[in-house]
Amino acid sequence: MREIRDPELLEQYLRKYHIRSFFDTKELPFRLYEYAPGEMINVVHPMEESMKFIVEGVFDHYKIQEDGSSYLISHCDGFGFMGDLAFCGRQPPGRYQEVIETVRAVELPMAEMRPVLENDNRFLRFLVDTMAQRMTASMHIRSDMTTAEKALLGYLRWRCPNQTITNVSEAAFHMNYSRRQIQRVLKALTEQGKLVRTGKGQYSLKEPL
Image 1 (cartoon, helix red, strand yellow):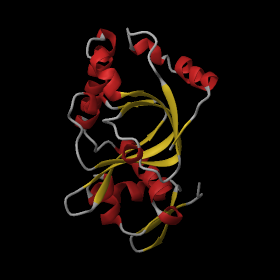
Image 2 (tube, one colour; image 1 turned 180 degrees about the horizontal axis):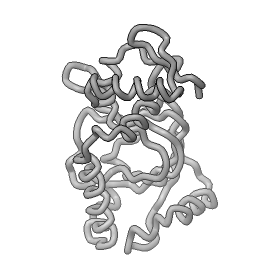
Image 3 (cartoon, helix red, strand yellow; image 1 turned 90 degrees about the vertical axis):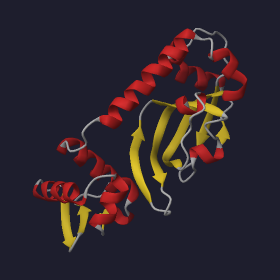
């Protein structure tokens, strides 16, 4: 992680994503940080220390369970916000955000800004809306084939060595889908010509990315 001390670049991101429009408070101390591939965003710069508007890059959000295994919660790219639960004092344990492609984030120091933002009506409405969207997404029925296909292609692209699945049960577990769901998606993608079956329980992208 490194801080990018470039006021003009920071201003570009603030304007591009209208970040100031989420606040009533003026003259907030925004900073721009960059995270390299392989870094864990929430380890090198915990959510309790800094709320983050992701303005560039790709990362995986996953959970480590009690037995040490993990599963992918979401594959994240594009603009996004992190720190809502930490702001509310409810940051769940065992969650990690691993950078896949260099991530840049516009950030605000949590401890310094909490007393101010607790009285910022526009930010609080933004916070409620963000949390409601995530709750709605988590309640969405994940049996939708299109959603599962996107999740599987993302898992193959970003998480599998040589973009090849070698264990269907393990892939299903990490993606938080059932084995039967993943088998159906693998069959559909193979028939569409997007995947190639290379062996028993082994599938590769036909055209590696």
